[in-house]
Image 1: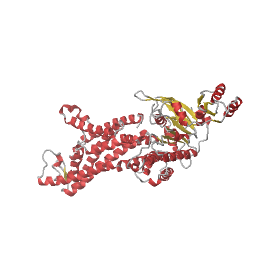
Image 2 (image 1 turned 60 degrees about the vertical axis):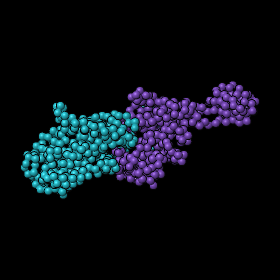
Image 3 (image 1 turned 90 degrees about the vertical axis):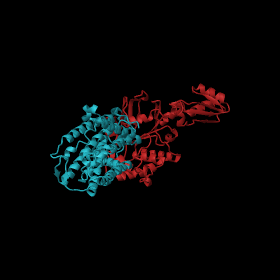
Image 4 (image 1 turned 90 degrees about the horizontal axis):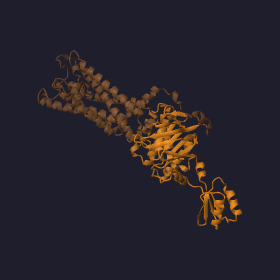
Length: 307
Length: 304
């Protein structure tokens, strides 16, 4: 089953701007799905559509197998979400803010509200500050209260839009560990970010947006596999380059005593054997894991804030 | 999509422990829970408390001022004041009418409605809490119903607060006893107080109707100040139009035209024609603008 699925999901705003351009999302249940893309690439618009806040101009989508927006009253209680930063009543305490949202949920039980609110606050480490007014919270506390709303009750899907925005490295680590905890219960987590390093460590699947289009969607390993590189260290780089080209590898480049090439479908140990047989003195051979950031820049092209 | 995709399950969806399945919850208590949460929000918002405070000062202030001036200037307040100002020195009950008249014409009651309705949707949109409520999901129609119910309670509360305090001040500061009506007949104090409360109720209904207009404005913008200003401009424009003889043809269709047409309640026998026309006018306005608010809120993209 797919926790989130869409076909040709499209949003064109009234001004004519095509914010989301026919994306086919497929988020498997139980995955941690990193939804990546530069600012303005349509991530938040997509999330707003998935949560029924804005209506698509074309295409269809479903949440937890329920067709949206028709079944949103059934689907959304099972979905916890934080959209575009935390938003609460400044004059209410953290606890009262959560109570307000819980009261709005027609499927939440009043009897267990107090316990569930305290539990959610505890999970994000805000129990000690529960009775402080929201306006006195630091940015990190506000962000954590936002995440707490998605923990008010057991969820099957948690959608977090830029949950680490404005957090310091410590706060970012805490959010990552929270995401791991949520996912450990079997909850699907859909987390958007423009900062890749933050989600790379927790994601099982990745989708990459660029100017409203989903340019990649699949398991994280597949994204890495797509562009696996081979690096050979040798005193005879020219010979090594010739052998690699002969093996049909693309993108062979020499820099000093290092030769790199796209590994493609070949296994590094086989390439090593061919190099040695051809008389290349191999001093070192590795398949450097490129960081997601490199893949991301490759997929999205331009800089982070360009699109 | 669901039938094909269900077969590619990667991991079973776990049971949710400790929670009733959604369909088991009774919608009526859930509605009231949301409604009471809304009431708490409206009545404990610092700005609204300040508004209620200002409204509470009005009957006290005017009670004291009128007590001092009416006695030094002798009976009869001149031609500027409302009809019943002349009768105030005769009976404290009329202070409530003076205060209701003043809070309406000095736009204090309308301002209270404008502020509360401006916050209701535009305010929630501007702080971003609207998207939180909608993703809960509170339900857009349900949210509007809860919002309007709270607006109506606030309207009743403001009118009751002003009238109640004015009655108390009137009874303390002025002579009380049997009430002489505008038609010259005299009724018991109890009957007079009941008539004053009827005026308060009629005024509350007028403000509820205005609240429906305010709620519709509130769904059109994400700036609460814009919604508040729009409603106040509408009230002032309507009152000005109501004074222009050249527009006499449309006077009875203006939203504020019937606000003070309760004097029939102070005649014997009671003349309900003014009040009845007012209630019909308020119901029509409320119906139209609630429909507009609903159409707008249930179809609008929430991008704030």
